[in-house]
Length: 262
Image (cartoon, rainbow, N blue to C red; front, side):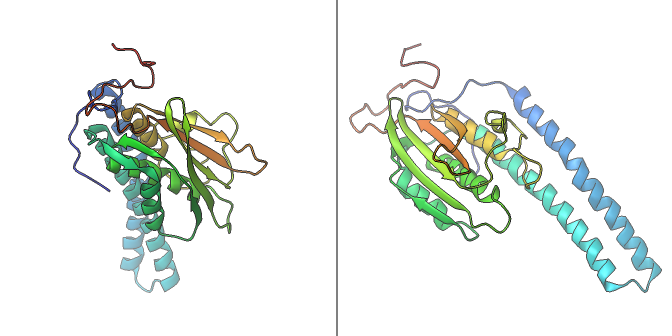
């Protein structure tokens, strides 16, 4: 899903790009990413240096070589994940959404079918919206990845994807039975490089990308605790619904315009 995505906005399609905060916003993200890359790169440099030294000394036990190699590989994977997340963030920022009718039920099934590991995911009726399939697929994939990651060790992830009509359009719900969200973190986790906990791997960009995509579609995204007595979290995306009777290029409102023309 790493697409070549030209920068642009959507003025007349019912999907509105957020206000352009200029290059400084993205430069800030890049600067933070470069800072965060220093740690895994320093680990790679340090352990690679030790590996060279012990090999030169000769007669190195194989388990010690394997341990050094695993540490180097782990740091390299951490750096690679951060670079991938940064590229995905840049792609979302730059993409001019190609708006069409998107059946989110079909799209959710496609995302679930591509999951790499075992999980119990139930897809109910979600809804139909005007949107960019590439971006919405990225959003659903990020939410699912998040739900599969934040579970107790040895637990099979359980996730339900559903939707319901609301006044603003369609509310898409991704509900998990994981470890939940720490108190006070429900809004913070949508910021750049923010994570619910440092005990789980991640870059802290997945949910901020979801927020950005929601804004590009004239919607919003939030997180809350489950209210059915089970432990876990619910992520809710609210976006305009597809209207087959609307003009081909309606100028529909974004999340802060309350239906008024500018």
